Image (cartoon, rainbow, N blue to C red; front, side, top):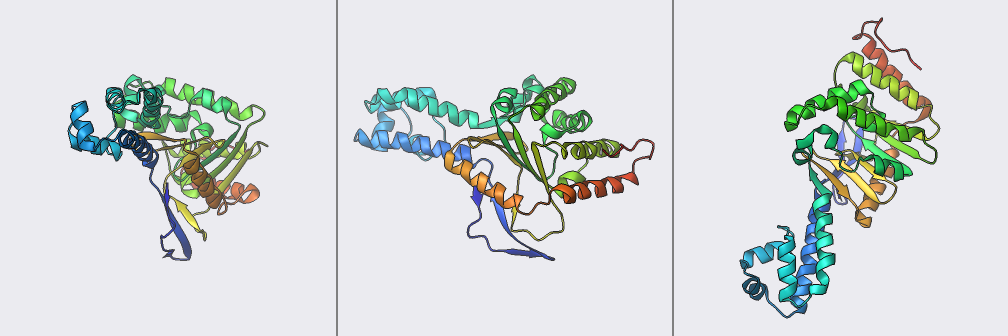
Length: 314
């Protein structure tokens, strides 16, 4: 969600902007509240108080309240007992399906990474990439995985492997990422990407790795199905996104916290991310200006990378 409507404008040097804060876990929380609300309606339709339902189902009244308010997720068994007490067994399949959806919208990296980093995918599966026609991507401090070089991806995944205590399968995980990049050259797909300049200046690995990654971005600028915009550091803007996010067509939004991946599917919330993307896109520069920014940063890296090792500009 974007908690921004009443946020006052802020001044920072020559910048004047409205801060739009994205709360990544809001979708999972809202889904739990919606599920709890449905269970509350079922209880009320049955003419039971919360305390009466708790007695019939063998629960503490506090737990019933927490479930109805979305503070605690029910189990499959809870839903079956709840509906049986309310003579609403016909509601069980749909409620359990909703519960599954809530569980899958918030995926902890530590759980996913137990079998290795190649399993940490979230929404970024090859199947999802193949079925998506329009990708809208915003990143504020990292190059999107679909544009990463193998060296850049290796450097970034090396940190996450250690941080999550995952088995070291970095080579396989990078291979998975490189395979997903094949969709870039397939017909019928468009990539609209907005990067903060900070993403170009944040190193993963050595200066040579970063230079190679920037060279890769220059190559992608020539692709007819890629619209790459860069928001300069020193520019007047109307909004700042607090986290990166991907919009797959109009059906799914994916974003990440340091510990989990979030998948948003509620139409109203997806629409808000789409609105936010349009606002951020308006502050970006494109074409020759975007290329100039990348080339300029590569020139700065030239003073760090030995000339014999610096990548050639496309």
